[in-house]
Length: 115
Image (cartoon, rainbow, N blue to C red; front, side, top):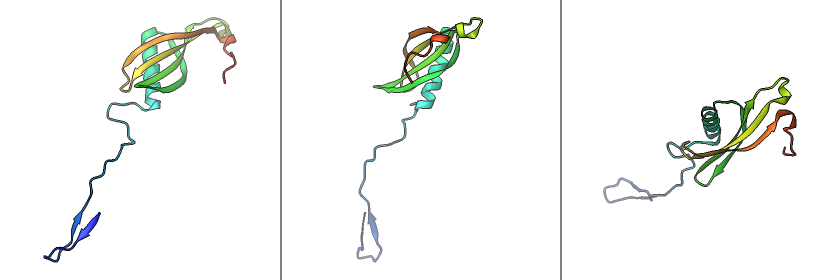
């Protein structure tokens, strides 16, 4: 920014236009928390099963990958419940691109070495 004093005695302020990259998401884009919630809702609606929770949310090339744990079959005792993890791929606006079940297991055998 520069200031010049013309013959009239008043200062005129000249500014240079600057291009700034926005750190804010564009209108209609989801952040990680919103993407997780959208993925959970989508899987629950598609499978008509009860979700246990979101296990991961990861940015993808043009959107989000969300993994959701679902109770596929309730058993007595609950350690016999059958669980599954589904991966949801969404675009930046939260629209479903694809989903698939990536793992199925008995609740009592859930630990397979990942933290």
